[in-house]
Structures are given as C-alpha cells and as structure tokens.
Length: 608
Image (cartoon, rainbow, N blue to C red):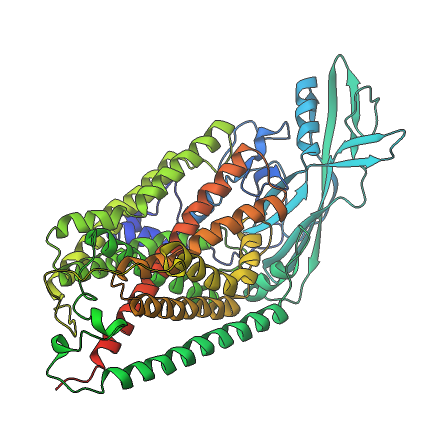
C-alpha cells in the first residue's frame, strides 16, 4: 500500500480522512519481493549543483534519454517536500539478470543542448535515480583543470553507466552506479567522431549505453539501512566527535554547578537576613531593607502585552514538545536512511497535532493573569509562527518556481499542507485554548500586589536588557555550538545524521543551561530592585536564536560552498525561521524556570 499525493487509496478516502492520510504518508515503504526476471523499475529523479543541496531540477530538464510520454510516480508528502520528482526511465532492469553495454538511446544534440550539458557539468551537476526506494547518485559528467601555461580545461559527458545491485533472496539490498571502466565523451567544440559521438551540421550525436550486474549479499532486507548508511556517494566529513561532546558536557556541568552553588549560597544569606524579624505578613516586611525583598509588592505585577507573552509561551511549549517527539522517534529508528523525507513528514504531522499544546498553555496562563480577550489570544497563538512560516515559504517557493527547481511545491501538496493546518492545526489550537481557559486556576502569587508601582532605581550598565541578552544567549549557544555544525552539515549538506542519542543529550543540556542562566539573571535583576522580570526572562535566553542566526551566516560564508539566488534565499529564509523556533522554545523554558524560582524565594520568606 502506498500513500501518494496524486491519488489516494479508496479505503483511506472512505473511512479515515486527513489524519489517516498524513500518518500513512509518514510510514511509507514496504519490502518488495521479486522473482528472477521480474522488472525492477528504475526511476529518474533530480539533478542539481553539488554545492547547492536545495537547488534541484527535474532530471528530464537536461537533454538526456527519455520516453515519449513521461509517467511520474505517485509520491509521499515527505518525498515532495524533499524536492523529489520521480519519473519512469528507459532503463530496463530485470531481477538477477546481468546486462552488458545495452544501448539506451541515441540523441542528436544541438549546439544549445551541448552548451547546456557543458554548463551543468562545469557546475558539478549530479543526478539521483531511485531503485526500490534506494537512491543512486552519480555525476552527469567529468571536468578536469590542469596546467597553468598552457591551461587545459576538459569537459566530458558520461554516456555509459554501470549499475551494481546487491540482493538477498527475493529483495533488493543495495544499488549504486559507477563509471570506472569507461571514458567520458568530450564536449569541446570541434570534436570528431569519438566513443559514440559524431559531429556534423552543428549537431552532436551521442549514444547512451548501460550495464547491470547483480551481486548476492548476506545482509537481510531488515538491515539494508545499515548498508545505505555505510556507503556514501558524497565525501564523508562527519565523524563521531566524542572528545568535543565530552568537553562540552564537562564545561556545562561546571557552569551549572557554579551557578547553582553560588546562587544557593547567596539565597541562604538572603533568607537568613530577611527572616531575622518575624512579622505579620508579606506586606509588612521591613521597607528599610534593600534587595529583592522590598519589591515583593511589585514582583507579581502583570506585564504589558499579556496576550503576546502568553502566545510566545504557548508556541514555545509546542516546539518543545515537537522537538522532543522528533528526537524520540529518531531514537526508535523510525527515520531510516532510505525513506525519503520521513522527518519532513513527521514534523508536519507533529506540528499539526501539537497545536493543542500551544492553545492550552497560552490561553490557560492568559486567563490566570486576568486576560479578557481570549479569542484574540488564540488567534495570535495560532499565527505567531505560522504567519512568518507562510511568508518565508511564499518567497522561497516563488524563487524556486521562477528558476524551475523541483523544490517548488506543486499545488496539490500546498493544498494538503494548508488543509492539515486549517482542518487539524487551527481547530486543535482552538480546542486546546478553550480547555485551558476553562481549567485555568488562580495565579497563586505568594505576595499581594499593590495598586501603585514602586519606582525602579537607576540600573548599572551590566543589568541592562542588551547585556542580559548577550549573556543569556551566548552561554546556551556555546553549549550546542559543536553539535550545531553537524546539524547544519546534515540539513544544508550531504551528510546523514545518525547520532540521535547524542542529540538528545545536547538538547537536554541546552534546556538545562537556559533554565539555570535565566534563574541567575532574574535573581540579579530582582536584587537591583527591578521587578520587570517577565519579558526580561523571555528575552535573555530567547536571544540564543540571534546567536544561531549569526552562526548560520558564518557557516554560509566559511563552512560551505553554497551560492546563487535560489540556494541563498532558502538558506537564510529558513535559518531565520530556525532562529525564531529556538527563541520561542528557549524563551518559554527560561520564563517558567524564572517563575518557579521567584515563587520559591518569596514563598520561603518567614511569615507568621
């Protein structure tokens, strides 16, 4: 059973609906058994420049062998989001039957088509085929630069491909393509008849051939993902970085230990000093003291822009749930290497299903702090991330569409994703908001808030918002900076990320550092008799997103070879969204940590 965008199974349409469609699309890919001599379909997919992973085009946009009528394969949601556009090819492959130098087609290329191929080869275009859900990659041609004086620039086209396929029993285990035993056909002007190429009348005649060789493999089909993970057409640059991880872990433990020990010692002294006099209540504490005690009547004064604050907390809680779910699913082995776009599908499904979390958290806290416009709060919560996402996607998708890239989503996929948000995401946000509003209790402030706010004394420069944002953003960023490189190399490169256990540890470290730093900065703020901690706690650690975006600029300029309008727009557009996600998620974590800390210290004041 295959869940496709073009046509859906009748049973799904009759009995299940959108939830079933999304879940079936997420877990596509079954073991297919073949008999000897059965046809094994080889699909052509996409081509693109090596250094721009997200700039891809349909394989048939190049002047290559193609059938008279192109038949496209029905794709899953994840495959479409990954830029796949699979179509049937002229390659005829039979299970366990070898073929030697079988002609594929003969093409007569015009000068324009030859120039098009030469330009693609000079830009290091690679192609991707798919056989039994196994990606097969190779370069379109060959380029050689040699010498300085005289300078030699050779461009050649691969016209023969050797397919090497491994099988076990009646299943395909692995496949790749090689060109080791053949020579490229030169594409320079004035070439004579060489290797199946002829020139005449301004045209070039090229004959494409292929060979197929089958090899038996001891690896069962259930473990073929290991074979795909061990083999890489592109150079591998990622290794298990234990030393860097241990170094980061030790630094984080020392940092957390330092913050916790110092803070607890300071609080112990504060409690001993403030609780010397046992008086009637929190409102009657000595006003002659200084420090965080004397602002007890203002520290729980509700902040401005309550609806926006609650929306930030709700969406942050949603992304915290979403990220945890993605990592746990990866640890359970649900994202195999051979499943195209499985993580993309999972992210869309979980984003829609976790919308209830954002609605519940936002509207519940909004009700606790005496918010009245709960309907507007739900609308703001549902659009806080979806609106920037739609705007960014519109710009990126328009540029992909203008350039003819396969990364431009077709109308059916856009309608499916829009339907997932309209029919699942937004209603769940509303339902979560209503439940949160009805189940919201009181705010539970340990101290009563007076009507007139206390005047805030002039603060030193190191307690200003910008300084707190710099400190609160840099420390969590430093905890994940090593792992961030490997994640960028996976998302914006050719690597396959498999160290999900380490990723879970780094994610936990990130949240722990963010919470501890937020508590420390909040204490320093209150010690200066400044009660405006609500937004400060969100911004201090939420500024980690700014550091991540700055790092993305550094990665683009110094760690990658990406270029061009298409790739650059997608990279910086989605890097901005990534920074926003981290800001919302860490801002939410730091706020709840600060709120719990403030409730603890003011509840610990001795009262009779």
